[in-house]
Length: 264
Image 1 (tube, rainbow, N blue to C red):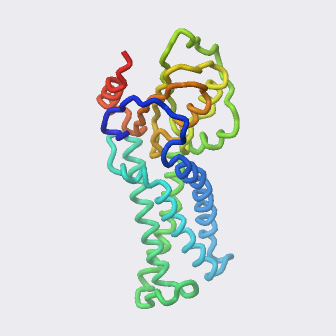
Image 2: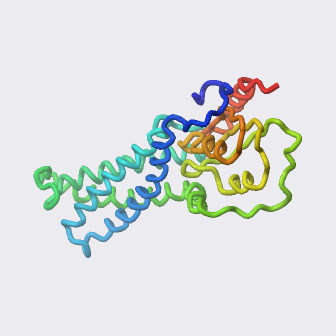
Image 3: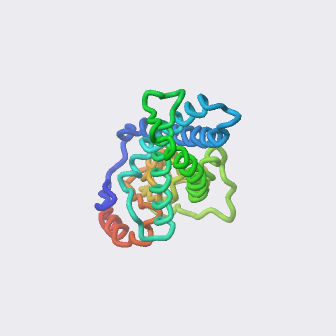
């Protein structure tokens, strides 16, 4: 389904969705890569105790991890662009600044390399590369902290993936409904645990299930396949995924999707 088009109802089948395993692999790799990037970046801020050779190797490692991070999030990168909401603008700005800082840090580091890649060093530019490298390294650390702060909710959701959430209040009685819409945010490609707790406690077997999500690049994530696995005999219609920072502008998109479902 294209986010700009209308969702068309499709009956779920028992076979795995196309690309599901690859998508799961990417989602599993993201927190590992991001965690390694954070550790390497912190270690990079200690060039004295580490020594120059190790400092340069860690710099190359961080640059490679940064490239891998972008490849793992390429679905989100295809939608990269200025947003209309404040949160979207801040995220866009931090992403652009962080990418530029990492690129300049890597290039200035290569220009001064004495151990890891001396063949690529440019001694004549050392007087420019050294202050540029220090300034960009510091700005990279600051921008990374800001970027992480913008995604604390996402990371908090991932931390809770292994534990069922406690539910408050009575669960709804859906026995009189043939069609149930299941909506949630996406955290690292997965639905929050409270959704799984709901599926454990409420009998939705044999019903028509319509998923919808908000996300920062994962689309519907693993929600369709998880719903199909959790609800025996369910008829799963194709869902809608809206970028979280574009929710306020998604009225027409949602209306078109609902019309396309042809539920009445």
